[in-house]
Image (tube, rainbow, N blue to C red; front, side, top):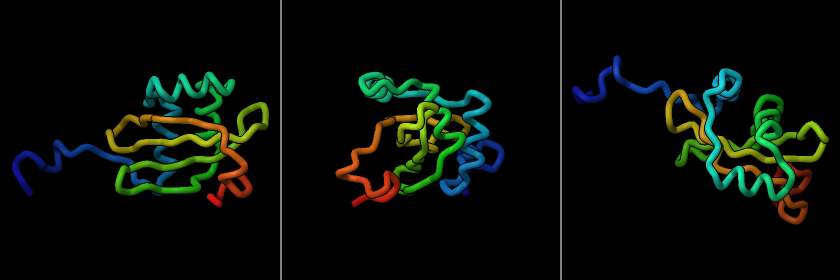
Length: 114
């Protein structure tokens, strides 16, 4: 272990498979939306609150370990489907790079890619 990577200065990065840790950070307000996510969401009538609701209640349908990202699928409060990408690479902050309503032509049952 290098002197720059000692246990006391390592960042506690959430495990990709630990959605409860991601949810805990989001509940505590430790999340950030990329401007792109907010812009695209607004075009579809999706609010930041919708994305947070899906993270807190949805299901992980894909993991992208090379980018430390999770894809969470769920329903917005109005019962429409929503996918939210969560980036877990920054330690105690969840970055939300994009949110979108899944296209039925690309997603079977809104949770499995065709």
